[in-house]
Each structure stands twice: as C-alpha cells, then as structure tokens.
Image (cartoon, rainbow, N blue to C red):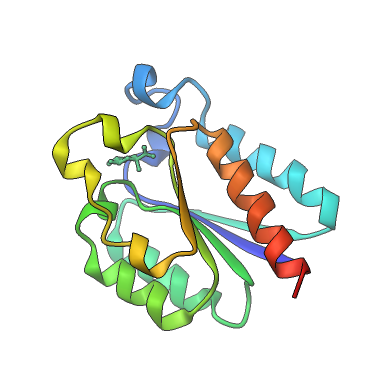
Length: 145
Ligand code: DQA
C-alpha cells in the first residue's frame, strides 16, 4: 500500500488559517496521524503540499506506477482547476477528494467541484478526520483487489 497525500494552496497555513473554519490542528498533525494509521498495513505515505497548480500536477504524474491511491485536498483549485482534474483522469489512480470544511454550507463558489467527476468520492465537512477516513477507505479498496 502506497498512498500520495496531496494538499493544495493555503493548506500549509492549516491551524493558523481561519481556525473557526478549519480547526487548530496543523498539516503536520494530519501527516503524523496518517503515518500512524499507515502502520496498520505497513504502508508508505508520501506527502506533498504546494501553493502552485503545476507542482500538484507534476506530483500526480509522478504517482503513476508508484502509488496505488491518492488523497487530495485541492483547496480553492477544487472549484476551477480543469488541469488538476485532467491530471487525475490521466493517471487513473483511485483518488478520494477531502475537504475539511463543509463547502456546501459556505459561499456559492465552493459548492462546485470540477475534480469530483474523476474521483471515487468526496469526504466533506468532517474536519481533519476526513483524511483518516479517506485513507481507511483507500486501504480497504486496494487490499480487496
Ligand atoms: C477546502 C475548501 C476550499 O473551498 C478552500 O478553498 C480551501 C480548503 C477545505 O478543505 O475545506 O482551501 O478545500
């Protein structure tokens, strides 16, 4: 089991950024938690956060043949990046989309995900727990194959 965790723009500020929306835990806390969960299967987790669209696309391309699942929180790119969507469609790696906040309770522009049609499913509004559920779901899928 080898999973790529991808976080998009502004998620490096997790814990400090609008804590009433995104909570007080940092991205480092998220990675530590997922690494701990990964030990259940002796799997490998690679983490990449970038504020740049092209870096996220490059990481998706590199994942081909290396990782058997992707967990992605594309941040605001969720709402308009056809390039990230196309990259995910191109590599055909099972992917789960995570949003920390409940985007459907928020501004209208957050209600649309251009990524959603190319992922297995979305986990929305469960805070950083969503990342753990995404990992557990991907692990179960990969291992049942
Ligand atoms: C987010 C929701 C997006 O609308 C926002 O731009 C983010 C974070 C979330 O995790 O709730 O950066 O993806």
